[in-house]
Length: 322
Image 1: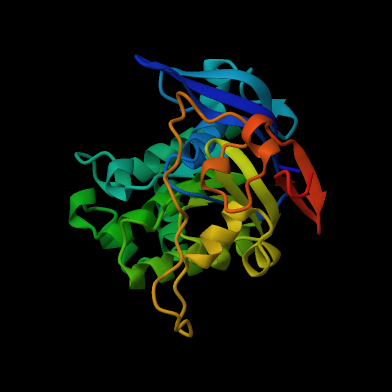
Image 2 (image 1 turned 180 degrees about the horizontal axis):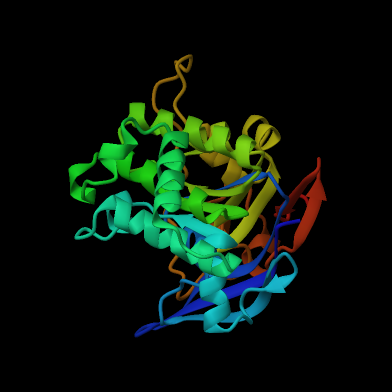
């Protein structure tokens, strides 16, 4: 097992009071497995990725829980240990690819800097000619044409899809065991989206990496993931295989998400929607956090928060199955 998260609680300090960002999240990721984290904006998806990388903003607090990466607790790492963990242990691809690179440095300089980090950790001497060959090889691995010319350009001279591939290639140079992709295709057009997703699936198979794929787009997540982690209001609603969760969702929130996806064959007029809006996480509702929007809400849902239960090989937080 590469990653195990146990009862993770994270809050943000705000001028209005503490904001619950993650509330009792549990997750495990096996070697070579892809897990998609899906849900509406504000559900805690990106916070989960940043928590694993120890990149939370200064107003964030780990209240409790553990993040075990190969049995080492990331939360208890020193700053130097956390820096060493990033890149070679876990690597994160951010939503806006242009902000991932230094705009005033050529691509080659930034790629070689990443390679120097790995060489230093491996105790190897740095040979620039050898390193440059490895950079070009990884650029070819991510299907970038003419890498010898491309690496001498600045980030603004590349398209969004090219920059995202450069960032993925940088991750491959560092050889991480876990890649966290936070909405990596949201800034790309549909054609480039498909190319990047195909590439990530190919690299997962080739390098044996585990992937945590954060997205609000379930159709994209389905092409990437072995399992789905459905989040709502900082909590896990449903965790199970991608096929079962999309074809037979059990949690009312999962059902609403799946029902809202347009399909070519659908011919029933207006798209289905989930009534209401996500809650204020500074003052979340009592009981089940989804109950104000749930069509199946019962009295117990309004007063008592459900624990986890299992049904059909899935983990659920819902009184319907409690």
